[in-house]
Structures are given as C-alpha cells and as structure tokens.
Amino acid sequence: MFPIIPANSATAASGNDEGIFAFGNSTSNTRYGLSNLVSNAGVVATDVAAVGTARYTPSACEYGGDKGIMAYGMLASSTKVTTINLISNAGVVASDTTGAGTARYLGMAASYGEDKGIFAFGSPLMSTSNLVSNAGVISSDVAGVGTARDAGGACEYGGDKAIFGFGTYGAVVPRSMTNLVSNVGVVATDVAGVGTARLYGPAACGYGTDKGIFAYGTTGPYGGDYVSMSNLVSNAGVVATDTTGVGTARARLAATQYGSDKGIFAYGQDGSDQSMSNLVSDAGVISSDVAGVGTVRGGLAACSFN
Image (tube, one colour):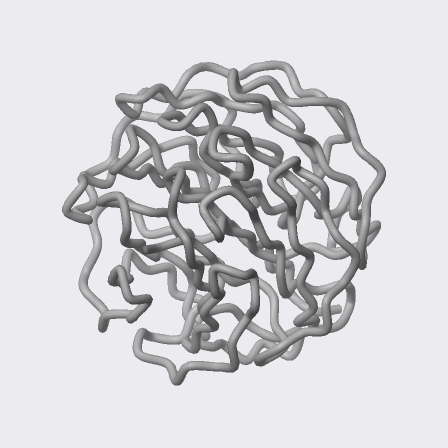
C-alpha cells in the first residue's frame, strides 16, 4: 500500500490567465520539486527542472493579484517544513525561503481580498491559519476556527472571499463541512456539509470569475474508493449537491484557474500515478480526460499567476 498523499489546490483571484502545478510524489515515495506551467488555453507544458526542495503535499495560492506562493509540505525524511517558494508573474519558481507558522503538510490554501492569501488546516491535525500579505509574506499562526482536519480543498469565490471544504479527521473519518473566509481573511465556523463526504485529496479551483468547484477525492480511508463527483460553489459561497463525475476517478490531484474564468484539474493517483488533466468551462462543466503531460505524480499543489 502506498502512502496516503492528499493534494491541496487553490484558485487565484479572478482574472489570472495562467497556472502552475508543482512538487508532489509518486506511489513509490519519490519526491519531486519540478513544475508544469498551464497556458491561458489550458495546455499543460512539459516539466520545468526543480528549483525548490522536493516535497509533497505543500499548499498554494495566489497573492499580489498576479503571483503565487507555495508553502509547507513534507520531505522524503518525513520532516514537516515551513519552506516557501514564490511564483513570479511569469511563472518562475523562486528558491526556498524559510516560512512562518507551524510546519505541516496536507494543508489547504486560497486567495482572498483580491490580492492576499490564506493557508489553513493540515497535519498535525489543526485548524490554525496563516495569512499571506499582498507582498507574499506569511504571518505567524492565527488561532484556528472550525473542525481540525487535513487533506481537503480550498478555492476563491465571490471575487474576494475563500472557502475551505471536505478533508479528513483522524485519518479515517471523511468530512463534508466547509468554512468560509471573509474578504479580510477571517475564517468562519463550520457550515454543515453538502454533498458526499470525502477525504484524501479532493481538489478545488475557481471558474466563471466568481464561483468555485470541488471535485474528485476518495470516500474511503487508506487510499480507496476513488470518486470523480464534483460540487459547485456559488458566488455566495453555497456548496451544491453532487454532480456526476467526469474523467478518471482519483485523489491527491491539484487544480487551478486559467484563462481568467476557467479551471483545470490535473495529475493525481488512483492506486497508480497519473498525469491526465480535466478542463473546467466558465460554466463549471468538467471535461473528459486530456492525455497527461509531464511527470506522473500526486500530492502536488497548484495556483494561478499573471
């Protein structure tokens, strides 16, 4: 049995044209630091050589309106880190810098307030959050709100707010609750879940400039029961009931916005490593599988830029 390796993903503020997938690991536990850019037409490019330290299940979000930040994660030595890698508005990954807050992996991140970001939740089980300034600086820990959990997804909605959803508690209990984030970065208490509870790496991204979508993941513990269902998020942060899935059921994938109003889910694991992608239209419709490009892997992160 390969390790449980959920993925986090986040969407950027409305208007970003390109995206990036980075880091991750294989079912054989090889860690990666490489990245893959996504064009404004949703085309995933071949591997870009690693700059940052190879690790898995970092989190990522946009900041500054056109840049991204990837932070936290776990090394091959099973050491949790606070390492940060900034993403320029040209999609260039910067070398490592030391981060702030509690070292963790399996966290979630999203942008808010149009030019800032927030990291929250993760393992060791927590609901702690860390705000990201419009200059890409991560703050110290903010006391947690909501149910401590990890391995869920997060995205922006409403143009300037964010939502955290799904995940797992105690490695075996799937969750469906959500926590809304205001346009000043305040995390709200739990909202009762809608849709099938799932864990181990559902992903989320924005679409249509002011809405979001959660999709994929697993409904069972220890890496089984992969699903492809999705749940749309309205521009008021309301999560819709399950929509029948499209594409290969899998978990530990990542997702990001591209083309200003569309999204893309890519990579992941379903017992083996994958690299296929699934595009999301500006109406929130997920397309069938597109042949993968780049190193097959799961447990990666994604955000948009430019």
